[in-house]
Image (cartoon, rainbow, N blue to C red; front, top):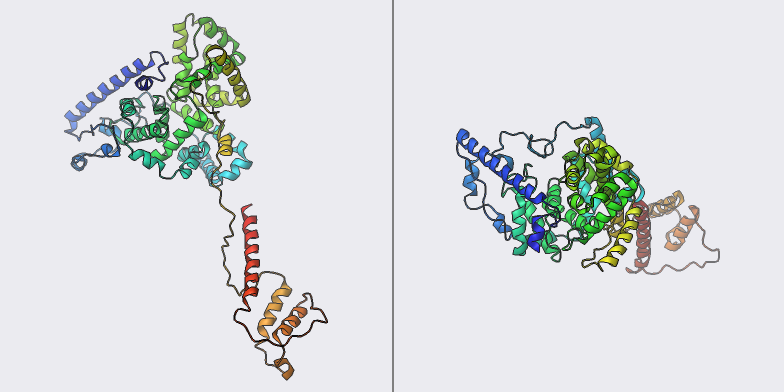
Length: 540
């Protein structure tokens, strides 16, 4: 079963895996031809590492000849290692002219980009406050697009992956050093070269991108051994690795699998089947024409939506659109995935004119596989997704309906999944991050004998008490005056509450070294309470 799940997207994606294998084989052959041509023109180059990735971290380390290979090689990136040195790389890291590369893009003006970066930095540095009071503003800024320089950090905050990392220090390193299950390691290794083969991180077999991808996927099989590995997790992890290190990518992958899309990658794939029925039911309200056509053709939703949903459209849309969809997905949850799917179905089959060219199942499936590029264009798609009125409540209501039908026809779910959380706010409420304690921690520490900050009268009284011993006694009676009487007189002169008139004057007692301790401790306690109050006001 593990191998079956590893070969295709759950084994329900039709013939796409065979096509993907052919494309990968053609790409590999083309890469070999280019490398041979480069060899003839420029002389020999250092070969890439060809060791197996199975096993522990040590097996991924360069061999004893790595130093010599580095000296012989003048190559920089993994793309150069496979003979793509003469190719240009676009701003997303894809080789220009390949499948993933895009033609002209809508560039954001530099001034606008810098302003957005400043706003996002402020949000990320005060994340809890923004999430608690200004979540709608975060959502609007995610819809506009996260600045590329901060996208990886923002995804970690939105998904709760940063909180997971703080709660589990050293967990990824522990999983990374573990040997892993050979059953999953073999399947993962065979899938590595299929993930974005024209991106500079993953173009080289055994390159740093494939190594990190292997580490992340292996760590997940150890973290959730009951789920193991599903092929659709590989492109999800690869997209994360394009924006953050392996450890952070691992915890974001955990959040996607457990909070955003729970049950999608389990053994029976029951959650994705339920969501297929939910999508089809929502389509009836969004586009009755498309719903009627798919019903007449008896096309199961799994035939067209499995790869969309399980890979979060990372294998379907142009790359700029993928990033914009993921920005909204991390903020608002799975409803963004449903909205994108509904928009694509509506634009492909939402009118009688569009349906006339799809008379059979084959033509309909091909229409959904080769979507109009204008429909997938970034600005158009994002606007349609934002305006589509599909809410979390509608999705959950349909989920209950489809779950009841499932139980009536097929019985109970064999792999029940936990309830999914719709977006960053729900995740933060379910798993709040560590908050600083309200322990008194004054930034300025005063000595024990320093006066408290109070009224002017009190400060004058303290100064008068300090000056009294220095002033020369004019009368002999003042020399024999007890300290308590002098302090009382000073307090009365300062405007404090005067002592009772009938208070007896005590004879001066011998000074006890421990006698000042109660007074000092009370003085210390009053300062601590004041400092604690100030600290609490500052936090609030």
